[in-house]
Length: 413
Image (cartoon, rainbow, N blue to C red; front, side, top):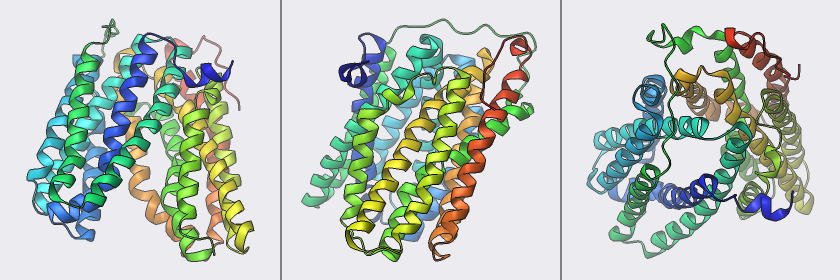
């Protein structure tokens, strides 16, 4: 497979989705890069209010993930994808009118709920519209192009912050609003797909919470996604407080991550469209993340160029973990969820990510940074444990499905 095949999606639905991802990345990159300034300068929040509001919104998203995602099963994936995008676009247009903590909490919570609806609709649509191998490669292209858009959006946000006027801050959210509405229109123009037929007895509510093997897979995957917290929050604090690396080196680490995710994601998805391949990819993700943690620890006792090199090596390892984990996770719900409950299972899987986002930052910062460094070894052990558990957990979840018991599922032990 040549370089072109890894950078340019094939024509048809994969290419159309990649283009949408560029737009989406531009919008989100613009908003998120400047969101802290927007919330303080325009909404009038104090830093601790932003933190409390984001945590409460994450908790609301956690509680509502399954019922909101289940709407894709009830009303159709494509329809809910469009509805979610429209709602987000309208909600972002409301940001300039938000003032104070309670209006902030109301808008951010509604944005999270709308995002859940739209993301579940998109994911289920891809499962229904594409064959497994094509689906995983399409997700990989979308992720790569999302990073391209994110970089463009960060540049636009930097311009708005440099202008430093209220209209410039309004532009941070209105750009994302327009792009979300554009994506809603583009999503509505995609080919319609047949929905899965409902099974007898499928009307029972919240069946996913009875599927303990799947919930176990979700929990292990949530641990593996801690690579994100390590790279985005723990590593920067470690660099600032325990190494002599210059602050601007954080920018080099971020650019390295973005370039790798943009150019290598597709190549690293090979064979991840099967359960066995997905489990193998996530096992590699856990192991390389585990290897990166002692490298961060070592960077705390070296100096100068050696320290900077070690931090870059750790960045490469954590980025590889990011790409392998993502490739494997795309297959989990697609293959382990009953066809008529994919939205519901998407919601449960999202709950694992939301729980990780709520718990991991404080826990891992305390463990790795405030411990003086020895906690990096505990974080590494956590990744090793998840890497060893993911294969058996997926094997058990696959064979817990009656319709799959007679089908050979080659999942690495």
